[in-house]
Length: 422
Image 1 (spheres, one colour):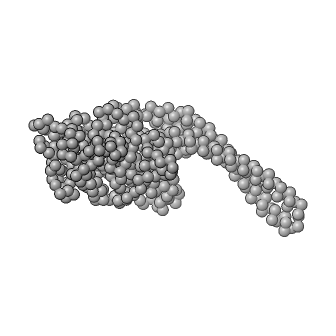
Image 2: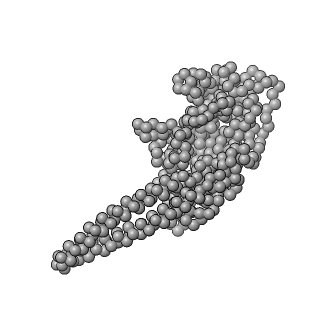
Image 3: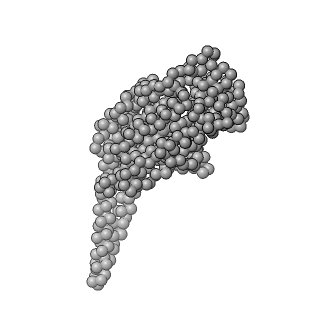
């Protein structure tokens, strides 16, 4: 959520910045500021009434001590009137505050100045490329044919047990999943991230805190009996560790990681792009999360990107990095870099990671702050990234490392497996 102070002091740049997303914020911003002005006026009245009541209460005690019974009773009657006014003003203030919050929830984050305006993925910028596509002397198979041939993943069995988008991993397919998870977690630990094992369900406050609600409500699996949500990413429980936290000083850099299954409804997904592992309702992912001082946010983002690059290079995969345009940047993010791996068999790029900085957007909702050098509370910055999501990494490994009669496993995974080839 944007800081209301930012709207009060710099509304034009907020409105202009959100145009990069092709989002016209002018009406919402004006409504917020109008209600905010009214809220501040009613709040001032409430404080004035509370102050009067406090003064009169002190006078009542003095009057009783001095034996001025009638004057004390008159003062008590006055406080009764003020209590009614106080109740009415409190209700007005609360209603206005709720109205402002609901309006603020509709505003996405303002894109960073490096982010270009654009409507869709077609307007994203490629800023880095590494590696080369494999050169096959045979016709390469897409991963769904490889997994079927070597009995690695049974998509139909997943449909039978649950439905489309819930594959069943078998034998070496299951072992490869486990190896990749261990590899990603070990590499994150080497980079200074502390591993956490997080819950797979969260409450509404947690989903609101990281911006999944109300923006992505239709994409989350909801359990109405318990009012809980299956997590779409480990970002949600990991970041919410620091909800309602004030860090004691300004000397901090928090780095956490965790592996979880992730659950996404992916409503509206269809066609060839959902074949095999390309788009699933349940998948595994290792997430990295940072809580940083605002001055370190930019450097932290660069570190996270270098970490993801190192994983892809160790896996021997050709990849590119895109800086997303305003129209393709997620609701809560100020800037996002997507990592894509080229699939030689499918002849297209597959997204395998997103690394994002949110600046104060999440911490405003989370009430995540730190004490600065002047001992005043200041909002932290948050960042997160996939390091990595497994489905398309598995697809890319199988397709790009295939040989005529199987698949060669990258050497970085050998110590986690009892085989080097499928």
